[in-house]
View 1 (cartoon, rainbow, N blue to C red):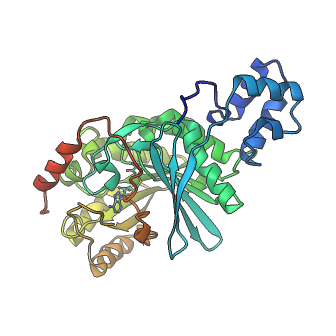
View 2 (cartoon, rainbow, N blue to C red; view 1 turned 180 degrees about the vertical axis):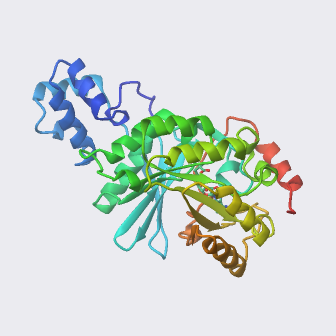
View 3 (cartoon, rainbow, N blue to C red; view 1 turned 30 degrees about the vertical axis):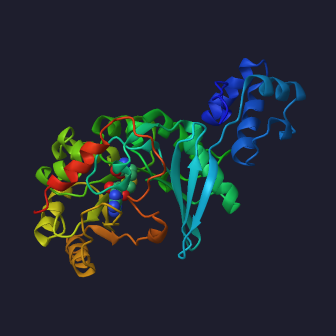
Length: 365
Ligand code: SAH
């Protein structure tokens, strides 16, 4: 890999940023709009091919800027139509992106960080450790590639790949703005979903600047259990998380929080816990996504039997909470929820520790 360029990358910029870039070079704002459109709507990443930009602007861009995209290193198709792409970043780190077709709909599951610094007990990405945040071009670059590969914009994007998007706030928000821009991928706001493990202050911040759909990885109805499964809960317990989520959807009757709840055999899947969950969600417009646990090498949780998942779902549904069981997609290519790993050079030095902790983790309810 050649030395990493420090020239500004237009793919890191939203529409206003592209306008400022060309204005700074002495050209008119509308050329910035055209630049933005070339990049995202037409997928053109060669300044010289942007034929409606003045030649002098193209030369100035060639001198001062550089378009850098992640590179698709591997393509793993699955029998159910799911595709996992392994993308290599300019510094050699790797992240994974998943394409999930569903009839006319198509969802792209996008990564926001190289690895993850949170240590959720049941997640493969957590085992990789954490290296760094992705920048805007690396996040939107995943959608860029998907749109080119599929010859169409996806209909939905979920920030549910590797990493915690609210721990990479600015880049995640800018990338999601680009996804929704009419000059780019034209996604409706309710078709862009950010999933968080519950970084409470940034849920409030997100509400200020964005109105994408919010999914929250809940996984447990009590602090005692959530502290173990989703350790960020020790910092932001349910008493803080729940009001933040309620605030996020307040004022718009159509909005609901999507709660993700991974079904772990004998850990969080009893009817008593379903009742606790019902009580916890009271007063918050909600839908629940039950996710059958996807095992990965070295994980020591089990998947709840389907009857237990169905009984849990039925109990929630009976109380009036819209509840779906998420179909596992792409598990044979390790593309299912919580199985994304990429190749991460961990910089936290905690990997040994995590391995030891897996043996002392709570295993009873
Ligand atoms: N960090 C964000 C984004 C990741 S989203 C978040 O936590 O929400 C990925 C979803 O898959 C999360 O709900 C996560 O908790 C869930 N998940 C992680 N590991 C899993 C596994 N092994 N099986 C099923 N779901 C898993």
